[in-house]
Amino acid sequence: MAQVTVFGAGAMGTALAMHLAREGRQIALWASPFDAAVLPALTKERKHPGLPEHLPESLAVLGPDDLAAAAKDLEMAVMGANSAGARTLARLVVEGCGAPAKLVSVAKGLEPETYLRMSEVYTAEAGHGRVVSVGGPCLAPEVAQSLPSSVVFAAADPADAEAAAAVFRSKDFHVAVTDDVVGVEYCTVAKNVAAIGVGIVDGLAKVTGMEYRNAKSALFSQAFLELERLVVSLGGRVETARGLAGLGDVLVTSLGGRNRLYGELVGEGGEPARVLRELTNRGMTVEGVESTLDVRRLAADTDLRLPLFAQVHAILFDGAPAESVLDCLKG
Image (tube, rainbow, N blue to C red; front, side, top):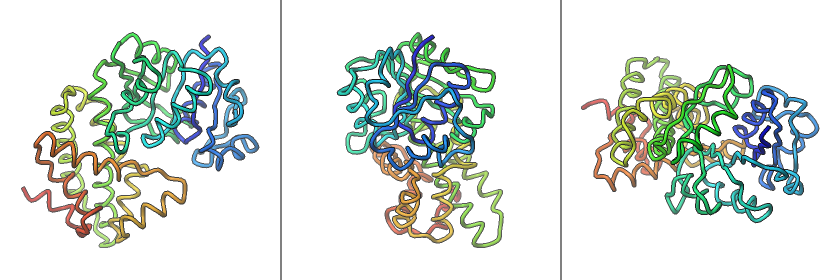
């Protein structure tokens, strides 16, 4: 049976480690130095503070000094960093125990500054292209609870995606595979911006006492349309945008999650930078803020008009009022 280690004990990495352990996999969860705040809870309480379930007894939790043990007989590395920390985590792993033969990336977004996709970051650090990127609707708390989930694994070589999928599949965790890495990874960028936009409408609804169901439905449709245009213009396939990685992930992220929560707080009147600081201090990574900047740049590069995404940018960075998110529905 393949030895799998999840490197990085964030909520998603931990949830996937829990899933694999429940399926009888030989699995370890390695907490990096950046996971120091959650390591005591993982080892003493056997529970991640951001997840509703306790860790399975069979899941081994290793600390920063146990990197060699985490890499012993390793066949597949699941990289649990967010997009900003992906390269740092990869370097810790590669310098500490060599490049894993296969990598699975759970991060969604682009690397800040370089604008590289996650598969490009991990390929550069590992020295090979056997990298699988995860997309689709996959909220960590639900994975931790073994609730039904369907995701898509993307790799340049479909055989690599299928090999990783075979490790993860279960009756509650369904995995489709594709070689459209570009499409899947750009979907992960745009979907968080869409969730912020929908969240802003939720915040406006709380302030006014109105539900805004018509407006939110129209805004969701606009968000998906803009995601599809962007992904296809960047080389992804239209069927990818219309599948789990695009439409599916936009829906689940708009219904719940950190990016939607951030948007809601901004919609209620919170100053965007202050709201971001407060959520960060609570241990929440809101990747959609950086993704809003990425989408603006990508839209400019491809000469695309994306009214909703542009308005979200204006609200977050240019001082536009939260209610202006509805302006994109005026045609």
